[in-house]
Length: 233
Ligand code: 5GP
Image (cartoon, protein in one colour):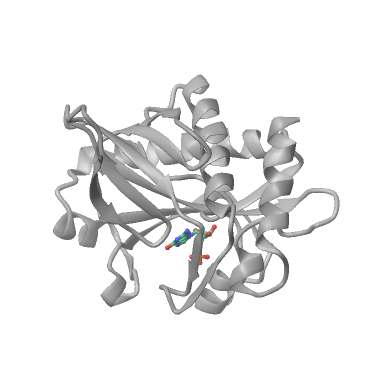
């Protein structure tokens, strides 16, 4: 029996027999608006596990340091253990309704260079937007490391834009998380899936991401199946 270290909204984390390796087990639960909206979609865990694996395998080829090791089965993947920084890094290539609400920037406005934002991961505070100085106060990240995270984030954005463009999707925005590995290095961690990205079909303009659940505009499983099928083609 593997030891359950942590259960989050979308994943369970288990310790493996190796001290610095974990198993992430993707759940079928979907939550939105800081857990206020909840549902279960049988098969969602499988989609996010397999789609995340495709993304990380591509990022390996692009020289991005990350935690992913391999897929174990439909819902589980093996990763290197990291201490996750309490920061959500959001990259925006285009404005969405949330930025429109916050700053009145019309939806679909393109950003070049992309906007990079830090949010403090704290459910009780509703993950507030923070600046660099807040980040230094709230984490052990140094100025040099933040510059590294910023540069890496822009490189990840370029790689992800290319990755999704290959399956006819425009990457509107996404959230990533970084963690510190056993050597003390900061590497890309967590998942990259339609739960964490906004993706638009370049031909139809259809949204193929978790917004269909957040906004109640479509069938989450149908949409995630479309993405996985395009990746497996
Ligand atoms: P927004 O700040 O516009 O709501 O989100 C920007 C991007 O980051 C979207 O692609 C969204 O999916 C992702 N994102 C932001 N916060 C979270 C979060 O707490 N969980 C997940 N899964 N994605 C998030």
